Length: 86
Image (cartoon, rainbow, N blue to C red; front, top):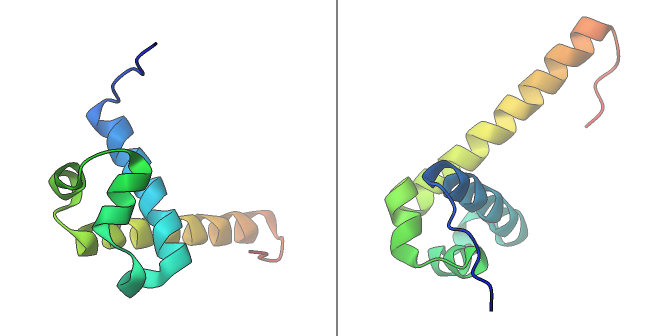
């Protein structure tokens, strides 16, 4: 049985953000739970809390990343003269 390599702190954080994004998208903020996020990431809940402090902290990071993505797409569209398409 081979063991998976342990993720670095930054890799684990990125994984948790991706998992959190998927859970928030599916269940909304109120319906999402730290337990489900931890289960999907195959980590304990304290690991998620260690990285983000709580659900609100993780949600804020997810929202910030999404806003940054939207802004960069708008800037690209303006720079290239294209219409914005989501």
